[in-house]
Length: 247
Ligand code: ADP
Image 1: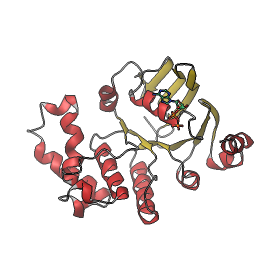
Image 2: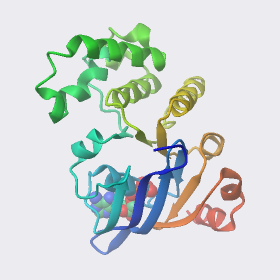
Image 3: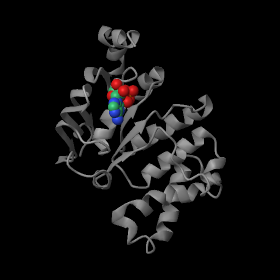
């Protein structure tokens, strides 16, 4: 797709948990080349929507399209294979394994590559080192992942996601728990990746960061999409202010 084309299209998607409508008829487009934000008060349905897009949860109704293909019936690893990557809020690295081994790890458990893994091992190690260069962690490649700071571990996770060459990355709270000095570096990496063609959908609580990094910004409240637009518009929107003040 060209910049501006719809890459991910969420169409009238809903998800209930018992009597609770966690995601309520949400329609949202993520365009190629954007860093799109998804914000909203706690419990507004952001994580649930992420899980519906990646396939961790089945939707009750609606459709999800990625790059012109309907994907809501596909298993998570199939969506991943099509170029839909995600990072996780909770650090899930193998702490005793080296940083480089962690970056390569997604290939080992992605089914479509398992059989090939020996043949391409040298290439993968090289790619992992390139990605560690990109996130600024090359010097830690041989160290156990558990020895790194929390923020550095989040950068390792980003390198991990990149190993699968996604076209869209869903980032769940990239800034959460990251110290201010590393935060500047993390946002630079996201901007660089974006400039090289990777599209992002970002859930983030740090609103100043969102307004600086993302455009457009989509706002959920009570499972519904209540506003969507450029950061300036969202900052001034009475509906958005009310949703946050009511939290
Ligand atoms: P957010 O990420 O915006 O904080 P969530 O998507 O985590 O919101 O949650 C939306 C709503 O759905 C909340 O009321 C939450 O308690 C509820 N919820 C989320 N996951 C489950 C689940 N597995 N079972 C029951 N309720 C859930």
